[in-house]
Length: 293
Ligand SMILES: NC(=O)c1ccc[n+]([C@@H]2O[C@H](COP(=O)([O-])OP(=O)(O)OC[C@H]3O[C@@H](n4cnc5c(N)ncnc54)[C@H](OP(=O)(O)O)[C@@H]3O)[C@@H](O)[C@H]2O)c1
Image (tube, rainbow, N blue to C red; front, side):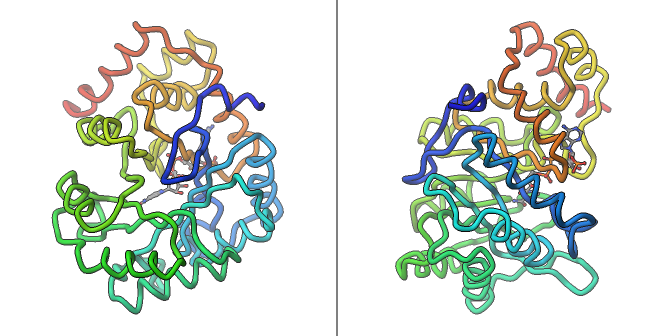
């Protein structure tokens, strides 16, 4: 039993994971492109994550590209049985580090094989289909053909479970008519709450919701309300932001990203933080203030 067990666990498909996991995107170079500044430090973060009890890692072969998955393999292979690695497909990277849609059958199939190769796996626990109708957030568009390709790769035994990323509630509903969806990964944090209703619907259906940018992503969260509450609770703003997500809904699984062992430890210590109701109410007001700003 490690301290992160205190946050409880949730099920993604047939995999039970602790609610505090790790997002590996920040391990690649600047702009999620190329190798890390410090290769040894990147390996240390991954090893520390597992030593701390984490059993859920989020990644993609388009981080680097290939870099993050290769680091995970170097640091952690052979993987412990209880480790769940979740990857995503649907994009690739231009020479200029741009993010391009990669939704053809050939590109999706290649992406699954690249993930298998770079992670050194025979099957991937969970593959999220990352919608790319807009780079700025979810946008309507049909995922039917692409999901059919992924469902076929699942039938071939290369993919155990299918999830979705950067999607609308309609796309989730439509996808569920094609195949079982075990998780949804969209942008969500204390200041960005477009998915409030979707989270509650998924919770009722026992489907995991995995917010990306839980700490604000490339522009880490900044709010005087958040800092004030953190100071009152003798915690850091990042810990308060994570504790707020943990109390928000039982199906929320955290994958904060960091390239630093110190930040990883700080983030994991968020499980110790109990937010009083008045602090939650105050934190809930941040989103309204952000919308008015
Ligand atoms: N599906 C998608 O489209 C999508 C998009 C983006 C991300 N993701 C996934 O979601 C995961 C989480 O998102 P993210 O990593 O981009 O953003 P995040 O977790 O919101 O924030 C990461 C940023 O916060 C900093 N940070 C982390 N812990 C900190 C701490 N305790 N104190 C101060 N700064 C801290 C990190 O810098 P340091 O490295 O210096 O700690 C990094 O700059 C990713 O790793 C990736 O796996 C998915």
